[in-house]
Structures are given as C-alpha cells and as structure tokens.
Image (cartoon, rainbow, N blue to C red; front, side, top):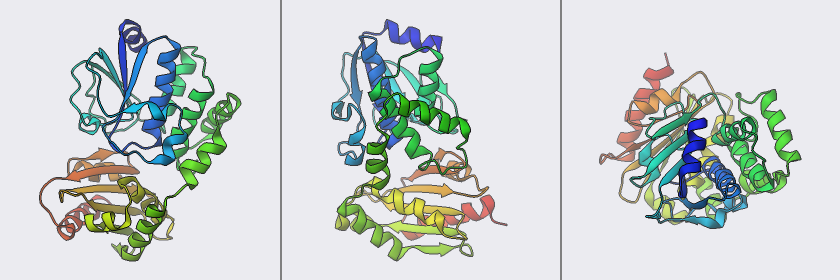
Length: 314
C-alpha cells in the first residue's frame, strides 16, 4: 500500500484504466479511484478502449469522463479489475499499478496489488481507503457499492458473508445511491438485450446429462438483435438457476469470426482452471477465454465440452 501511495504522490498525470467491455466492478473501481485522485489534487484521466459501454453503468459517478484515447502526457496508469494486460486494449509505456481480485492475474504491472480472496476490486479499494484513513464521499461510496453489487451477484454469491453486509451498510451510510445502482445494474435492460435473451434461451442446449447449459451465439444473431457483448451475461447467469445445471458456457462469435468464451459455475467445478487450458483465466466460479483460431462454433463447442468433462465430470 505504501508503495502505491508514494507512486501516486510522485506522479503528475495519472490515468485510471478500465478493461475492454467493462463491467460494473471495473467501472466502479475506476470511478472510486478517480475520485480519490481528485481529492489528492492530481491531474487524472479515465481511459477505456471500448467505444460503446453499456449505458446501465452510467449511474456510476464520472462515467461521462471516460475517453478512448490514452493521454501521451501520463506518467502513471492504474488498471482496475483487469487480470491480463491484453484486456487493457493498449500497450502502456509508463509505470502501471495493477489493482485486481482475479485469481488468474498475471502480475503485469510495475506494482501489483492483487487480492484474490476479495469479492470485487471495489472491495479491495474500500479496504485500501479505510486502512489509509481516506474519506469516502458519496460518489466514491456509490462507485464502490456498484462493483460489489455486480460481482457478488446482487449479494447471492457464496462468497458473501457478514463482513460484506457490514461494508455495504457503511457505504449506504456514507451516501451510496444504492437504489439507483440496484435499478440500473440489476434490473435495467434494453430492447436489444431482451431480443438477444429470447434468442439465447431458444437455442440453449443442456449437455453432460443436464449439468452444463450451453449457449452458442453467432455474429449474425448479435447483429440481428442489436445487442452488445455484455448483454449475453444475464442469460448465462440465469441458466445457473436451473435445478441440475452446475456450469454455464457461452461461446459468442465476434465479427472477425474469433470466439469469446465465458464460463460460470455454481458447483465445485473450477471453471478458472478450465479456461486456463485454452489461454484464458478468471475465478473458480467465473472465467473467460478467447479462441483466436478459425474454429466454427460447433468445433469450439466440442473442444470446450471435452475440457469441462475432464475438469469436473466423472
């Protein structure tokens, strides 16, 4: 912690970085750090390579400050909630502080502050702020709450405990706009996302004796629905509510015909280890990977299902 504080004090222009296709934790932690740096009278910018970010995250303070160009004058970058530097979407040449909670983090920063036992990166920042006597204002409290809300699956995750709720209570007392976050992040849905949801559930198949819910989404289906990548997440998560499903697998085809894979688990299956077999990573219960070779969705499905069977099905 002391090294991070000293690096921040010494820097003239700091850029907070959210990963490609950011979720509420990446946006929330970057927002909270943005506020902290402003409190310390630092020149600060917010970078994210993704041009179109899900508008449900616009409830997070400073969202309008996000830019897709990385300032050349920056002498320090702070990445939030990013396990691998490839997900930054840019080669960062200045010093880089890597703050994250993913077990598969590759420790790519000049300084790495990684705590895999924390539910979210915003929870790491909350601990960082309270430990160092930082005053958490309303904007910071809202941002921290947003990330914790999303990464805890609205506090339904098995990792949630009494400490989680104690932290949430404090954030609400500090002014977190929890009602706005709950409505936007957990309930808000676009017409395009609703159309995609119908397509995904119509085409969903149950594999491995009903223990794996499989979704294959083509680029044509994505374009027809008008949805964005993040819109695939809700149906994937919801499929875990089915009685016998233990793992959910999404294979989404990109416009260049590469494939993005996402894995979710509610059992003892470590999907992070499964994802690592194909160059990805993540948590035991939530992971992802990219298949850059020219595989069809059918070929990709067969390849990953074999790994899932070897990984946890006996």
